[in-house]
Amino acid sequence: MIREYFLQQNAFHEIDAYSGVDQQYKMAKAILTFQESAKVALAAGGQLEDVVNVQGRSDLMRGRFEENYLDNIDDLVDEMNKQIAAAAEDN
Image (tube, rainbow, N blue to C red; front, side):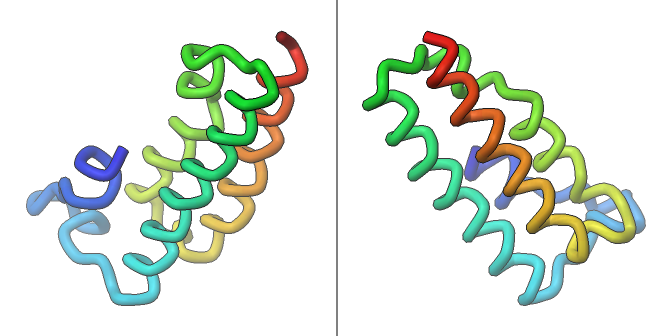
């Protein structure tokens, strides 16, 4: 997740070519939040594949190509956390 989401940028994409400090901070915080949520879900008996493949994680990673990403990142992280918790409960 660190490489694909945080380190990789598309120099030819108008929005993704540059990330400000605020966006970088929120992206790094989102990665740590995913790690903590995943640890809790796995400790509760969730399956690794279910936790890693939640749609919210993909939405979070793809969202960086949208203009309002900085405004939406907190909502995307919240949704990802809900989906991870649900994945743990399903098992």
